[in-house]
Image 1 (cartoon, rainbow, N blue to C red):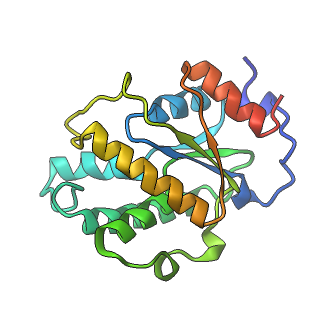
Image 2: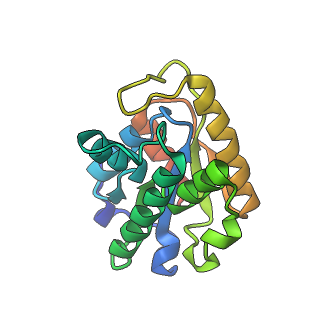
Image 3: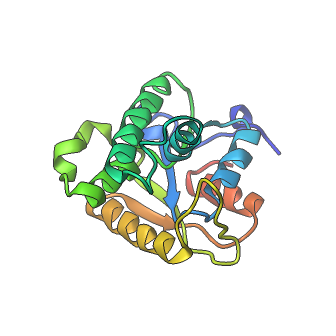
Length: 193
């Protein structure tokens, strides 16, 4: 399997920030596993802000947990996603984000009705194609960090899909297949050979 440095991608002349690719979609749909596969192939990856916040909050006071205070959680996720984005501005090649700023902004809008226009600058746009993991009940599992039900995960997926469409992103739904095939699917879609 070639590494990212050995792979030619057709869109590599694009602005660096437009090479920032979002993996979003249904919670428990395999995003983190997919991110690990892409990382193993040599690509830069950024783990989900929300999961990092939950892990940190569960070790501390727990005030910004999504099941305690969704608004505080979403605001922290926005801060972390912006910092992640800034940290990756010098990365060469494709960078894959497990969720990111758009997901956090949409969560804040859902939590307190703060408009997306008030929280998301058009200059903060990612690559035009977002890859969504669809609801997949066969692999969905609740954990200590993922307490919401599968039905709630599906509702979130619907909100995210509508939000990304409203923001003008092209949505590609990932196939329900093994992680290697999913990674191959993404890289083929990005023009990597």
